[in-house]
Structures are given as C-alpha cells and as structure tokens.
Length: 174
Ligand SMILES: Nc1nc2c(ncn2[C@@H]2O[C@H](COP(=O)(O)OP(=O)(O)O)[C@@H](O)[C@H]2O)c(=O)[nH]1
Ligand SMILES: [Mg+2]
Figure 1: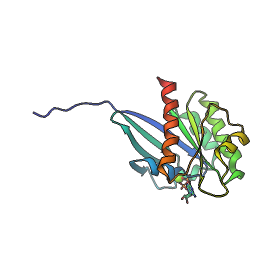
Figure 2 (figure 1 turned 60 degrees about the vertical axis):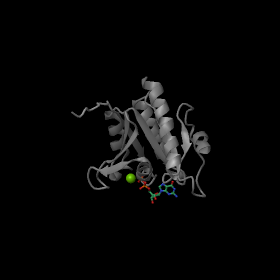
Figure 3 (figure 1 turned 90 degrees about the horizontal axis):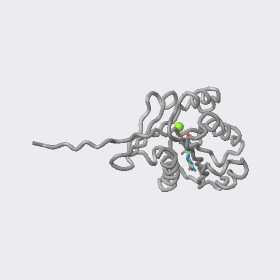
Figure 4 (figure 1 turned 30 degrees about the vertical axis):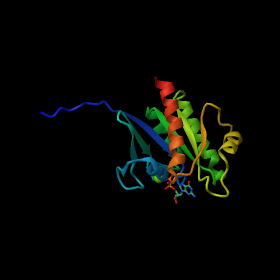
C-alpha cells in the first residue's frame, strides 16, 4: 500500500506594485515557476508562483495594467487588502514619476504600518538609471524599508529583492 506524506505548505501573498512600465511583469516572470493572468494582460491580475522550499510558496500578485496610473483605485486596493508583504517597483530611469511612485509607498505605510515592504529600484542596466542609494536619499525613504538595485530580467537581482522581503516577513510574523 502506498503511503502519502502530507506536508503543509504555507502560501504567502506578495503584492508587486508600481507604475506602468516600471518592470513588475518582467520581475515576476524572472523568479516565478508559473505565471498567469486572470483575464487579459491589460485588465487581469497577473500572478506568479515560486516554491521557496517544500513548505513555503510565494504567490506574487500584480494589479491589472490598466489601473497602474489610477491612484484612487490603488489607494482603495491597498486599503482593502491584507497581505504579508509588498514589493514596490520604481523605474530608475523615470525620475518624473518618482513622486507618484513614492505616493504608492506612502499609501502602503499609511494603511499597513507594520507590513514589510521593499523598494526595487529597477532598470539598473540603463545608463540613465538613478542608483538605489540616490533614490533612497533623494526621496527620503526611511531606513526600515530596504531600497535595492534591480534588473528585472536578471533573476539574481530579483532574488535578492525577494530574499530581503522574506527576511522582514519572518522577523515580523514569527
Ligand atoms: N533595460 C531594462 N528594461 C526593463 C527592465 N525591466 C523591465 N524592462 C522593460 O520595461 C518595459 C516594461 O516592463 P514590464 O515588466 O511590462 O512593466 P510593468 O508595466 O511594470 O509590468 C518592458 O519593455 C521591459 O522589457 C530592466 O531592468 N532593464
Ligand atoms: Mg505588467
């Protein structure tokens, strides 16, 4: 008779948020073993799953692309969900949008003061990219939020972003 071993898998949901074109989809695809849309790529949520080990799965969730400049919608979303972590993706080559990007981070902090979040300062391979440190200092991002360099199509840089978030999630919830 076959014996089955039952292993409890913890699923942690992580919202990957930021303005359109920041690199959210690319980042999620670099690290996820499975990735899918609930509807069309414009109107649907994009999700990506990563088995970290036998007992831990991360489920990354990207809001619909057609909402990625709709700040009222994003505020309502952030106010109505309760996830253990956020990755906020900044386009380091688009300082004209840093104000909007920081307002997303402030909204997360306003509704979920204790929820771990990390900032991925993406497109570091681009010659005009602002460095993660310049973004942190220039925008006055507090020290308890990691601000990390990222190149979304390079899995090693994305892995570091995810690891830093996981460390904070385990510090907060254990
Ligand atoms: N050079 C460079 N381009 C990137 C990077 N990340 C994303 N892109 C490009 O930026 C565009 C928008 O990326 P996407 O992942 O769709 O952004 P989203 O709207 O935030 O989901 C695409 O053309 C990507 O190939 C990066 O780290 N470096
Ligand atoms: Mg996208």
